[in-house]
Image (cartoon, rainbow, N blue to C red; front, top):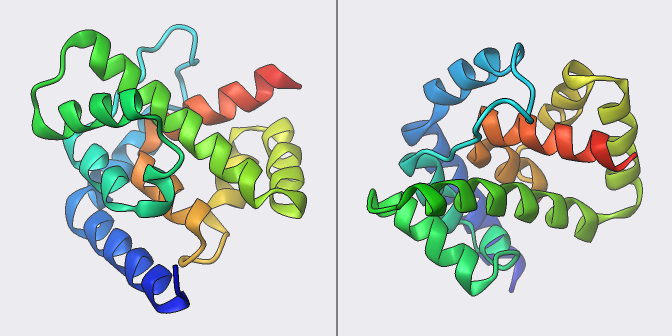
Length: 156
């Protein structure tokens, strides 16, 4: 991929987020504070799924089965199992993307996650708007973001 292709993908993803799930993201982020990942069923909305699939960097992190689950959610034809699978796939893709960009980003994200949900969310929101991890973070939505934080905390 050329630099211009990546820029266009980033701009497209940010536009889709701004148009499709910006308000929902803010509401979902506030709603997840009181819940834990073990008691809450994490889900991915259709708009979030479409935004997730629109980003080629994120889509590359998904397996064929994961793409089918996310696409079913995006089309509004997902079964309950596919809905859970799509949210799980989003967490997995976001985590793998963080690891792929590795080094300082991954280490700082883990450090922020250990410090708490607010620090982790602040760190991820503080990444440059064009960074592939930040684009995927915003596209994922509040419930998936919280599930990612819970997952990272369970690892360490």
